[in-house]
Image 1 (tube, rainbow, N blue to C red):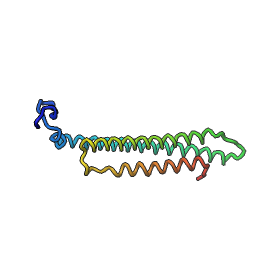
Image 2 (cartoon, rainbow, N blue to C red; image 1 turned 30 degrees about the vertical axis):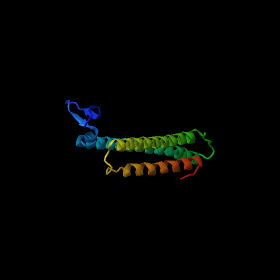
Image 3 (cartoon, one colour; image 1 turned 180 degrees about the vertical axis):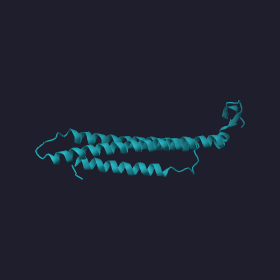
Amino acid sequence: MSSTDERQPTSDGEHFAASEVANDFRVRAAFVRTAMSSEQSLMSWIRTSVSLYTFGFAITQFFYYMARQQESAQLSSGPRLLGLALVATGILAILLGTIEHVVRIRSMREAGLPTNVRFLLPLGSAVAFLLIGIAALVAISLNWRL
């Protein structure tokens, strides 16, 4: 605490050294709250992408079923392309949400997020649902029928 340029002012006018701020309970709790908020955002991205997967896959299966019921009718490739687009959008959403979460957590760890805080469940869920989305995209692309 030898120089004043190392000190950071607080709202009540007191000055603390940077190391004291990093060890302050309020700052650490704020990091944990922000990390949990990031986790909640990632879970929202997962929910949105799974909805897109489901809707895209359901559209392709529904129109496949309709085509099977009316053998003489030829359906356009529009529903299949729409299903592909929805599943691909879901994959992109979960991928970008996961990248955003990882970048945010890494930057908070560098700034002082406690290292004993682990966020493996949302990342594991995101990876699992990403693989499910890729499988759905492949199934629709190769015209696999369920």
